[in-house]
Length: 237
Image (cartoon, rainbow, N blue to C red; front, side, top):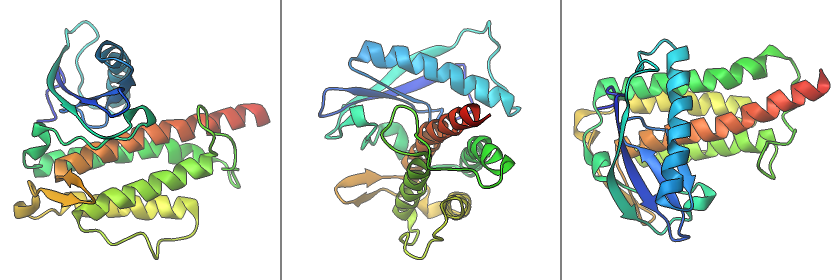
């Protein structure tokens, strides 16, 4: 379940490049990368603190600052992914559990809350320039947002969504269309599809894994894009 935030269960993914990615199995989207298990878990605790602060800001109940939070590594698997580049192919045992309706709705709401942070800044200023550098990358904010929309569409294709052909040309419209598709697909899964296990292009998928990856992408790429826009605004006054 995704609701007990006093005990965070972690899956470690050891990639072909020797790097490790820590995934929160019951707080999908909270991830961190390190050159060793120890480093990945240190970075994970920082990421977890940011996640809990964000959830509290949206009105969700989170452990109090003086509450003890138990973090345990429940699974450790090796994959062929280059996780140092934020690529993941892991399918954990926890991903095999059926994705319940309330979990899907909670995940979609969190996706919307993360997206809201970004869109609030984008839409606050008309004619905002998206072709500004995105921090810690060689890409622009527009390219990061395009990648977010493309990746979301790709992930949803694992649930039967149509390919991205025919999507709007404008970057923000593509993001809006992908977000609407996320809501539709994730909240209308038939009962017999909630634990469906598919293999596509050599990678195994379940609805729970799709949701975990959607939230991870929204958090990581959205934060990068938001930081780029904030830096551009600061420079331009």
